[in-house]
Image 1 (tube, rainbow, N blue to C red):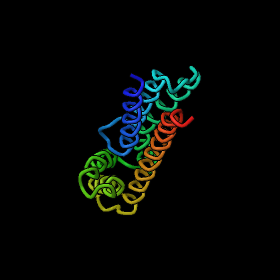
Image 2: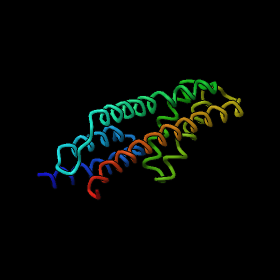
Image 3: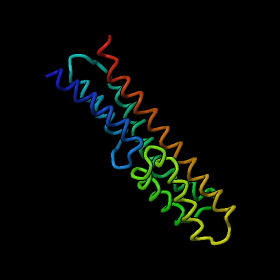
Amino acid sequence: MSVFLTILAIALALLGLIGCIVPALPGPPLSFVALLLMQATRFADYSWAFFVIWLCVTILVTVADYYLPAMMTRRFGGSRYATWGTTIGIVAGFFIFPPWGIILWPFVGALVGELLWNRGDSVGALRVAFGSFVAFLFGTGAKMIASGMMLFYVVKPLFA
C-alpha cells in the first residue's frame, strides 16, 4: 500500500506543478495533498508544524494568485475590462501557442481590454497591461516555487 500511495503522491505533486501554469488545475492544493499522502506511507514522517506551515503557504499563494492580477491591474489604473482581458488571455494562452501563449496572451488580453474601455490612450493601456503581466508572473512564480518545494519534500524521503 505504501508503494501505491507513494506513486499517487508523486503523480499529484507533478500534477500540482503543472497546475501552476494550467488554470483549470489547482496546483499548490494538489501538491499539499501529495504531502498528506506521503505522510500515510512508511517513507515519510513529517511533523504537524510542517503541515501547518505548508497549509498556510498553500492558502497564501492560492489566494494571492486569484486576487493579485485584479489588484495590480487596478493599481496601474486599469479597468474591469483589462481584468477580464487578462483572465480570458490566460485561458486562451493555454490553447494558442502553448507554452509561450500562457505568458503572452494575458498581456495581450489586458491590453485589448483596456483599449476597449479607454479608447485612444495606448500608453495607459500598455501600463495597465504591464501591471497585469507582472502580477501574473509573480503569482505563477510563487505557485511554482511552493509546488516545487512540496514536490521536493514528497520525493526526498525516498532517497533518505
